[in-house]
Image 1 (cartoon, rainbow, N blue to C red):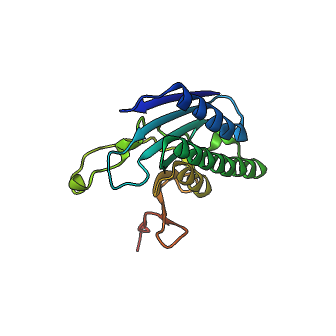
Image 2: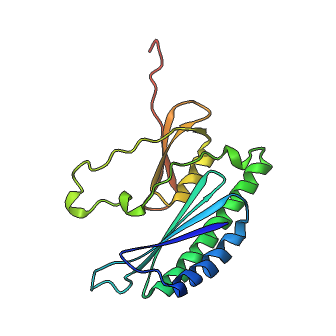
Length: 194
């Protein structure tokens, strides 16, 4: 397994790189498959009022699926530890769902691949630009079940996920509800002759 460590506006020392290799490497052993890669970005937020300025972003690619984690810490070592714990939890959840799908006759390859995003910061919109269209993203729609879409939503850590429903062939959106649970948005089709 390959772990690529980079720093954004910060220097990655040998000690930090060794700590990432140790902690994230241990986390990745939960689901030891090939090919699996991990991209780790270390950065500091320059806000003096923030008690946790160290940020670690981890993107794991395994069997066509993407698992993303971002954690904040008081220092970079604490943030790496928190991110490693979260990666372990996410990979266990992914492994459990893949095993469940196999028992239902689905393979891990049927979980649709997700277009990778090079930088998690690209997904964030600054407050002063929140009413402007600042990015257009095209996605490939792969037919999948509602359960597979829920898995992808959890693994990506997004609030919603757009997919083509394999049962109906229509575009659906799965979203995380603020009061807990998930919802699904389906198009209402008019029946001919009514």
